[in-house]
Image 1 (cartoon, rainbow, N blue to C red):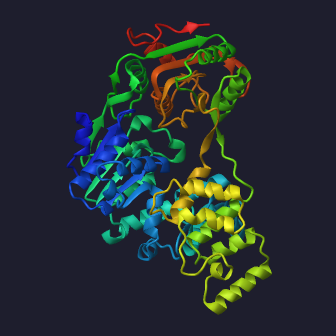
Image 2: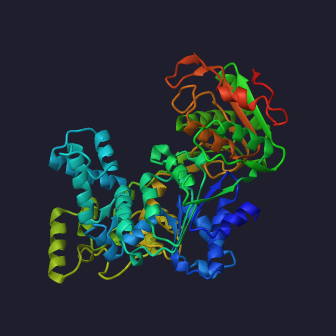
Image 3: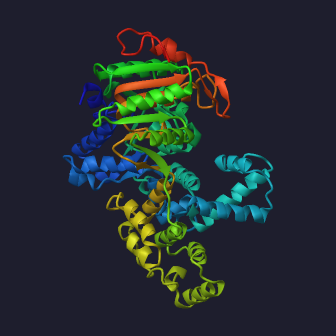
Length: 565
């Protein structure tokens, strides 16, 4: 470890905020921080580590298991996403009731949440817009007096979720926040809280982290890499903690990924942002190449990038990073026509019975919830008569509806690692069972059915790589977060996210993330004329900073001026 990393790992402060530049080894620092706590004799069950994704949690668990505290790390209180941790807390009956959830909780998918919401809107005769309703849910509870129609719908929807225990992700976050704010320590047992990728945390996320009563809090992030504002991320909250006297700040500034020329170029882009932590990014390795190329027409730009790809060493990893999925498809079509091996991110295709499979898993996670069981039986094609008969049998025998319907044995408990076999036994297709088994295999040994449902919901929003995995990767800049390649191409870099020629601070952060995916070579291309987003030909002005900031510094590896072709 370098001095900055060692200082972070061994920080004695109650609140430590680690600002980690790209390639600075933040995952290693988080793992070593946990090892340091275990070495110091801290109870592993009091250590909670919150990650942004399940994949990040899996990597952390793997490194811990292979390390010097492998056995002790198996007893950690929790390593995973915030949603997963809150769900575990709410599975405790006392905690659930304190949070106002009246029935054992289960996670519902987006389709089920929409169906429940449609039922509420119909009962209340709501005629307003989806946008107004979405805003009311975001700012629940109601702020207006008297409440607006959309606020009444949002209130009734949340009340129904609390009454039935059927929680979507937003309701889960709000219930968890309410619990953490008022619960005694024994219901939220955290001695040491660690948080990764904190720059992409929402208002509610930060409220939860701030409310946790812990001996130490160790928060890692990089405000220069905050690129998820469209998901509710609030980088200003990270900066508020950065500037607060109660937080001890440590900066990890050495980049072990990118060569010096790439670090210099990326730093010149991000330094134009005003509201940032002012950390420096120092390259550990010299060299590297940054090339800025300007073309008269988009066609010339397209051909030039393809020529460079065709001439690359087959052992070299490369990526084309663009802003939108439309651009991903355009580049994929061009590479296919040119015969250049490549892989692209695509929406995952699920089997026809996938919805039924998810509903069955929800019942398995919470067999005492008769509302869930009725929804599953209805979706599985059971008649009203059959469901009524099962209800009567359940009432007569003192069992749950799930038990009376043969879905499970009352008192039994399912685990994710047997879920695939169970859904297959209940008539779900082998394809659906295989997906359940695949997702369950990524979960730790102590995972619950709730963890499985949350992982499935996360998996459905992912785009998976398809194609020649040994070829160039074509993906959005957002999708490349956390990855690295020998060579990165940034084509069509002549406009901002909204189609204008002026970059917002988030635009620059996104470019910074994309540029720092490159290890040894970065090529930025743009054209003076091409199609706008409406498909019309137009003259395009070069983004100002490509010329002023990147093309002139001697010895940086960048072209001295744009090359017009």
